[in-house]
Image (cartoon, rainbow, N blue to C red; front, side, top):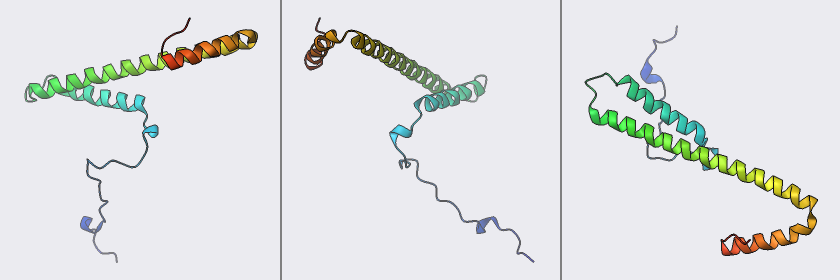
Length: 123
């Protein structure tokens, strides 16, 4: 016969303190997912307490500020992504054009190197 179940016999898993950085790398962070998750949590918190008179006003304002900050970050992330995609298209078009007109490649590379060094556009 088995002894009676005792929850205190179950070994507890040690939980890391909140200030301890978990294992992993920044490259493993899915920024889109994290921002959306934080946005969703803040929005749910605000909606669940919207008509609750017991929740203090500063908590509601804090949730609203979190939503605004998260939306700002999402907007910036989307703009950065759009800019990166646009630059990639320009680079692809430029490479194709330089392959068609190899006589332009030396002039372009020279102007590009100068612009990179001077941080100015050389036209």
